[in-house]
Length: 211
Image 1 (cartoon, rainbow, N blue to C red):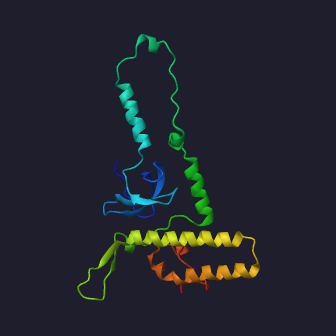
Image 2: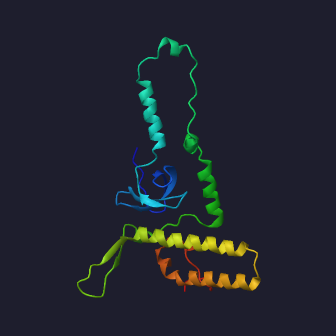
Image 3: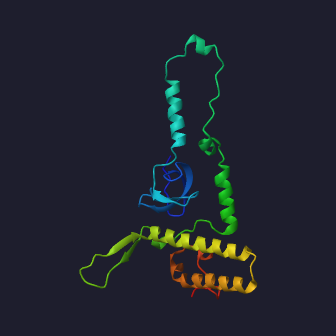
């Protein structure tokens, strides 16, 4: 079976270096062969290098292999009924086939419009270059997909801020002023719309279109 090729915006499971457990992640950058390079944790939002996939499930399989190849139990032990080994509380989400926590987070993101955005195909595996105007100074480069991920994070936090402002109980004139600031931020960021593959994921200014 061919190994899956990943690209920025795809979801996969990996071991989060901050949460210290397996979580669903979003691919931030992948190499030319479709192997993930950088991922972002869907639980805590931290970004780190891809760590090779889930570790708890792999550890469980290894433990099972060791147990099956061990020495035969003593007669005393065999006379006792086998005890069920309960998983640690921190590992419970890996035991179930359906990760309810991740499923709930996915539904919430879809309802609030915070789903992972996808960059346009022409930018995949591209490079962002900052070249100084002063001769002799070194230029700075980043993978475009990494820069795109940062733009999406700003967009998502603006949307969350907008929803919080809309739901707050405050004087109407104050709410309108705050909404105007947020709309102005959207308008200032429309230059980055060229990076998005889907029009629905783009920033919208006060006129509903690009500024």
